[in-house]
Image (cartoon, rainbow, N blue to C red; front, side, top):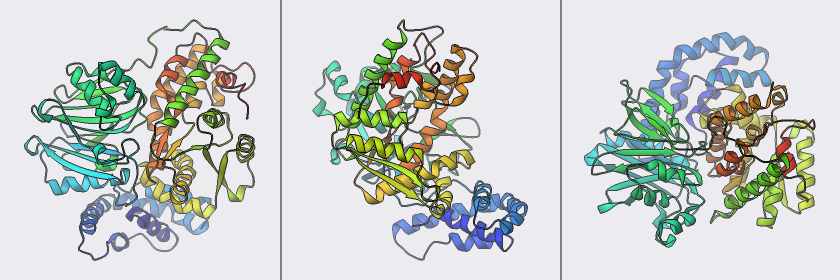
Length: 540
C-alpha cells in the first residue's frame, strides 16, 4: 500500500511536468478512504497532522517547483527526474502511516498528554514490531511507555514488553536489541537464565544490582541495544544505547531544553505537543531524568591517549581473525527464527560468509545488481564465491523503474533527503523488500563497518602518518550511527528484518583501535590490508 508521502511525491512530479503546484492537489491525494474502523480513524488523525505540515511547507515546495519546472519538462523520466524528486520531497514532513511490520521499536513521553494523541505518535513507529504492541501510562499519567515487538528470542507471550522488575514491580522497561552474552552474565551474577523473559531482560537484573551506577551494568553488555526504564515510585526515567549506536534512539526536547520524549525513530517525535526539537541519543551513553542535562559515557571502546597493545602485524592479523570468527558466530547462533547473509563479493561480506559456512552449513546469501548495467564484478565474485562454498545464493536484479518507484518511500523510511544517503539506500531497501516478500528470513548479517574500521576508502592512503589514519577511523566510527548504520537499520526495518553487523563487535573494534600500528595502513597496494591478512588463509 502506498503511503501518503509517496502519493504526494507523485503529485509533485506530475506538477513539475504540467501544472503549478496547488495545495488542493496534495489535499485530495492525502485524503483517506471513508471507513469507521479504529485503524482508519488513526490514519485520519495522522492525515490531519500531515495537512497542517503541508500548509507550513507550501511556500518552500512551490519555490522548488518553480525553480525546477523547466527541468521537469526537459528531462522527463530520466536521471533528472530523480534529482527533482530529491529536491522536492526533502521538504515533506516526517510522518508515516505505513502498515508494514518491522523490528522492535521503543517510545516514551515524559509529560502528561492526551492518551489518544500519544497513541498516534507511537503508531507512527508501529512498522518496527509486528508481534506485539503495548502502550502503558505510568506515574499517574505523567509518563507513557510504548513498545512494538519483533520476536527473535523467547518467541512466546512471556517475552512481550514492557517488563516489570524490582521491588513490587516498581520499574517498567522496554528495549530494542540483542544481548549476546546474556547467559554468561546470568552465570556471573548467580541467576538461572531460564528465569529471564528474554535476552534483554538481563539488563533489568544488572540495573537492580547497580541502581546508583548504571554504567557498571552497561559496560558488561555485549550486544546491540537501546532501552528506556521508568521507576514508577520516583518517576525517574533511565535510558541507554549501545557503544556504536547499532540500535537507533532519538529524544525530543521542549523549548526550554528539557528532554520530554524518546523514540526509535524521529517520526515518533516530530509534531508531538511539547517537542520543539529532536536529537540523536549519543551512542555509548546513558541518561537519567534526575540529572537531565547530562549524557554520561560508559564505554571504553575508544582508546584513551596513547593506549596501545604491543603486538606485531601478523599477531594482530591472527587475533583479528579470531575475534571476527567469534563475532560472526555469536550473531549467527543468536536467533530462534531463520537468518541469512548478504554477500556482495567484496572482502568484507565474503569473509563473513566464508566464516559462517562452518557455523551454519546450510546458510543462504543474497546480493543485488542493476538489470540495465550488465554483469558487474561484484555479481561475478559473489556468484563465484558462493558456488565454491556450495551456498544457496540469490542475486536480485533491479530495473531503473524499480529504483525510481522506490525513492519517495526510501526518503520517508530513512528520514533524510541527503542525496548520497538515498542513492545508497534505494538498492538496500529493494533487496530487503525482496527478502521479506519471497523468503522466510528475518535476521540478516551484513558487512557494515569494515571500511571505517580497517580503512576501506581510497583516501586513507593519503594520510600523512599512521596516527592520522587511526584518528580518521575513530572519527568515522563515532559518526557511523548517523549514516551507514542508520541506513541499514531503516532499509531492513522497513520490511520486518533485523540487520546484524559483525565488524562492529565491540571486542573487535576495541582491539583494532589499540594496535601499535595504524590498522588502516596500506603497504601492499590494497586497502583494508589488516583485514585481508587476517582472512588470507580462508578457503572456499
